[in-house]
Every structure is written in structure tokens, then in C-alpha cells.
Figure 1 (tube, rainbow, N blue to C red):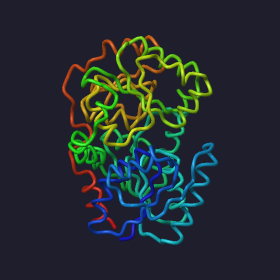
Figure 2 (cartoon, rainbow, N blue to C red; figure 1 turned 45 degrees about the horizontal axis):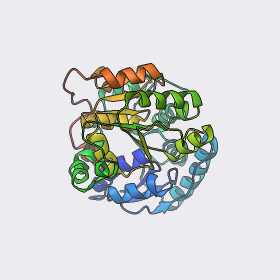
Figure 3 (spheres, rainbow, N blue to C red; figure 1 turned 180 degrees about the vertical axis):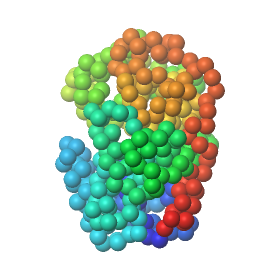
Length: 354
């Protein structure tokens, strides 16, 4: 079978790596990088760290407003699909690349498989929520990571083509955890002691587009006194500079450029707590057994909150600082994301269905 796999952003590179290895055992995969994330720290380093094959197409879509970026990616993906005439298009997650890839394939009557289907934060102010809902409703095959995701689809009337396979990021983490521990020197580089520092990631517009929110988050971390490793997303860096905050970070906040997957994995695994507004990082924190403080009021990974390993605090200074001081999971983690082998289960489903 000829399969076009469409990726464009950090979390998709991570999910793509284990699935691509399995697909290429018995199918022809054409890998399309939309260029949504395009600089070295957000793109190339992930292909190197994760040993992902070089993309067959790099569309160079770049950044821009939501509508413009989505439309640009859609047009460029459509050209590839017309040329390659695949039997299936695979999209991941909830980015503009996901939406554009799914729409381009569906309009050309090419079957669409959505990996990480069925997630819902029920917050339509988030662009990602719109992307994932639309992608699910045009997809033919919906590969769900959790039972909650399956139920979400059923509530929207989507029952055909739905498969509970577990989470491909479990595969990625299992494959790379030992490699990261062996190769990464990120703690030594920043003078960090295991279990005695925090990791922070912030990139959602709800936070980055609000000076008030960014000031509250940074002030709360300054209040803690703990070292805070802060890999700064390019867009976040731009907004911090526009607010005049880039050079006024608390002394304990160690700002750096984006980290590669292996360094980020090692940094998260050894942290005392992780603070983030990223969906993927919430899940990685859970899989690594590190308490997560989510800088949002909603989450698509509700299971991590229900299981007691994730707490939602928004961008409230006092709630953030209090969670850093007191939040401590009271029980062991569950197998909410399934066992290793989600990538193989997806390929097995394709073998039966296609």
C-alpha cells in the first residue's frame, strides 16, 4: 500500500517515528513535512534524534495567521497528493498541518487515518480543538489512544472506523528513554541536580498573547526559588521580547532555545515537576512519572487529572506557586495510555482493513 504521512510540528515528529518504522516493514511510505515548524531546534533536530527518514517533501509552509497557514499547507499538500496518488493519508494530533492534511485528502477522496483521534478539551477558543474535531469528522480510520477518546467520538455519532490502539508516544518513549539517559548531558550543561529543578514550557496563544498571563507565570516561578529550565518556543520568545520581559526573567529561570527530543526527554524525566500548557508535554510527564502542573483551565488529557498526576491551575500566580510547593500525586499511575505496541496495532488494523 502507498501511504502519505503528513507531519509538521514537534509532537507529530515524535508520534511519526515509531509508526514510520512499523509502516515501512510492509508498505511504501511517502513522508511529507509541511514546514509548520521549520527552524533547526523545532524540526531538524527531531528528525536526527528520532532517526526519522528524511522527508520526501518539505513544503516550507512556515508560520502565519491561522487561516493563512492552514490554507497554504492545504494547497501544497493537495499538490503532493495529486502527484503521489496514495491509498491512504495519515495525519497526527491537532495542528494546522493535521487539519489541512485531512481536508486535502478528504476532498480528493483519499481515505484519511487520524492518529490520536477523539481527544476533546471542550474549549472551542483553542485552535487545536477545532482542528481535532474537524479532522475526526472527515477521517475514515480513527486511531484512539484512550477509552475516553472512543467515548468522545461515540457522543458525536462517530462509531465506524474507530479503533482503541493505545498511544504511539508510549512507543516513542519506550524506544528513546534509555538512549536519552545515555547520550544527553542536558543536566550537566545547565548545572541541574536530579529532582531539584522544574521544567517549564509555554506556547499556547492564550498565555503567550497575554502579557498579564506571562508575567503571572514567570513571577510564580520566581517565587519558588527552584531552578527552572525554560526551553523557549520561538513564538514565545518573540512575545516576551515585545513585552520587554525577555531580559527581566527571574534569576532562577534558565531560558534556553528549544531542546531536541533526547535532551527534553532527559530534562523532563529528572525534574521535580513539569509546568506546561502543551498537551503532549502533559502526557509525556505522566508517562515519565513526573507531576504535571498545567497552565490552562482545561485539558484534552482528562485522564491524567483524574488519575491525580496533573493539576490545572491556569495562569494564576498563587495557584501556580502553591502547586509547585504542595502538589504531590497520592497514588501510582495507571495504564491509561495502553501498553507498548500502539504502532504495531495501527499497522495490523491497516492490514485487515485496506
